[in-house]
Length: 311
Image (cartoon, rainbow, N blue to C red; front, top):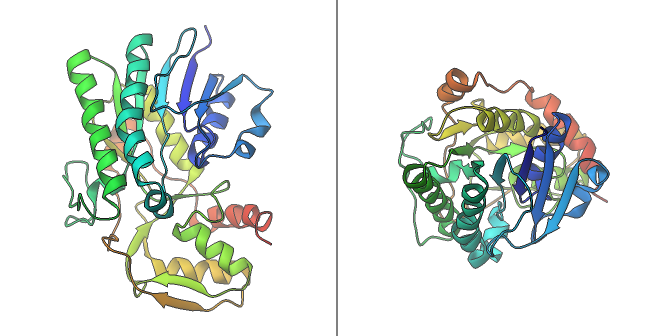
């Protein structure tokens, strides 16, 4: 029997790539999105495949007819701009949305995978970050609405696993990039690309020495699917351990776009993490996963996409 997967946030950046990959592997996909930050253009190319779209806010009861093999909860604003502009919806989808998605998985006897984030580690005092690290998060800071929503979502997911015996899995996603990111997303790669392609000043916050680890979206999706199909229930980091400074990624994008942009510096936002790099030992040993796409290869594909979006 064909397996059927429900993806919340299916019209978003990662959700749409997940939909593609699962369809390619023979799954049927039910995509749910309220289009708060998602875009129907991201899933327009799959409307004639074994894909059903439901416009729905997952903070309300979720009803899906028929059998479900897995529920992948990807619905959430996911960039600093989003969760500063949408603090309460961000908290609600992390709390109420996770509860409703877990309820669907429980009712269907389905496995459950939640998109958690490296933000649960906050501004980390451990480097690189292992899954055993509890984090350094300011619960009342401007980023707290996202960080704590995801930390609560992990706690709720774990409670359903322990109390109800739900086959629940937590994927901690580190910085990811690729086609279908929003031009005005606010994160480093889309911001730098859109500015560079317009030959505008490229804005780096702080002195640019803070680090990130950038994973191409196809690598991330492969890790997510391996997690979904695995027997693992403890959190697993999925990200690229190749660490670089924000200034380095800005310079690389300016060079690769052939831009005349120059870098300018603005004050570092409150609670912005100074370092970020995943320890992916668990992903390697338990899932047989590690990233394959070289940074320049991934950036080339992403720049090609952004050229079609930036005027």
